[in-house]
Image (cartoon, rainbow, N blue to C red; front, side):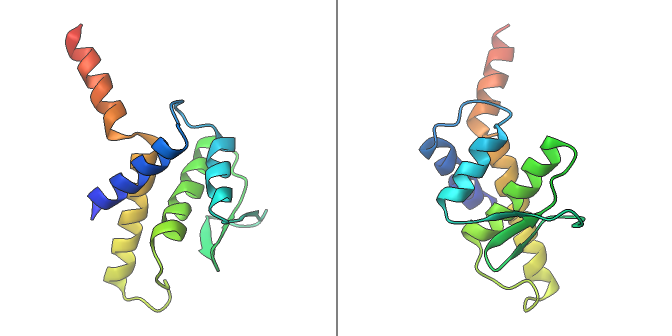
Length: 123
């Protein structure tokens, strides 16, 4: 389940040649826009959600919270085609775990972590 999300995150990182961490917001927004997903900013929204293929979110005071929320929802939009309200609890829990995994792999790809561990071990 998580390996598939790893492959999908690495594909996007490779496709967009993302080598800067933390990933700048404008790059994340470009990736999402290229897949015809709109990000709609609403002032009074408490948390991000996906509605009819659009990501609804607030412009969080912390850039990192915004990035995390948008990439998590993009994971749902890009790779899951189910309806939250028609699924049972287990399906929704699985979908949330997959979106979390996608965001984690997107923000810190395994090869970056392995490279950092390798360089630490050499010192």
